[in-house]
Length: 169
Ligand SMILES: CC(C)(COP(=O)(O)OP(=O)(O)OC[C@H]1O[C@@H](n2cnc3c(N)ncnc32)[C@H](O)[C@@H]1OP(=O)(O)O)[C@@H](O)C(=O)NCCC(=O)NCCS
Image 1 (cartoon, rainbow, N blue to C red):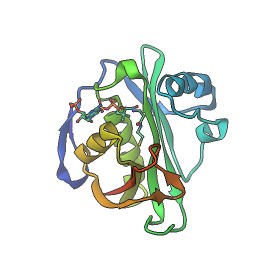
Image 2 (cartoon, rainbow, N blue to C red):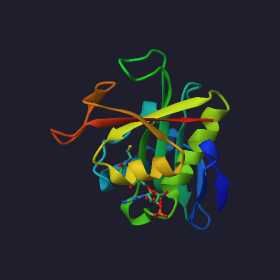
Image 3 (cartoon, rainbow, N blue to C red):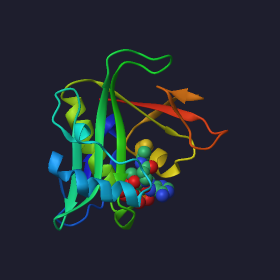
Image 4 (cartoon, rainbow, N blue to C red):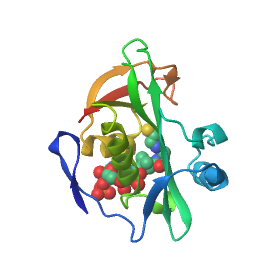
């Protein structure tokens, strides 16, 4: 699949055959927990999967198995250098399904949801997370700055910084 993304970047995405991206449901909680556990990420709560007009939570499903999950957050106020607005957050793909376009597909689907509501989205990550940084840069995100913490989140490693990115429609 080849499709345009923010900034007119064109990204070829090798999606899994038959993969479906759909809105997450509360009954996905246990399946999402399996993906989070396998990725050493904190488990999602039921509230994170509940419908909310300010944010969206999605899952990637193939062969009836949840292989990835991703959500957005909405911050009504700026916090230091971090602007108000929509943020991507909580993207996780099961280790056995990585490098097959699942993370990119979940991100493009979230961007579509955000572009219907706003012209800008932010995302932040630990500067050591090369996979996350490369994937988001390939989808048109550009670096806004490097900070000791962003919205109260610090890097896992003591001397590492957090990187703040944005994409515009
Ligand atoms: C980051 C993550 C979601 C990427 O998911 P994914 O499904 O593997 O991503 P994609 O297959 O869509 O990758 C798209 C591109 O991103 C880049 N990329 C992805 N993983 C990479 C890695 N480990 N190293 C370098 N580049 C990588 C590549 O450019 C890749 O394209 P390519 O495979 O054609 O080279 C996944 O590694 C993950 O779940 N990590 C643990 C949780 C996490 O860090 N989440 C992000 C929090 S901000």
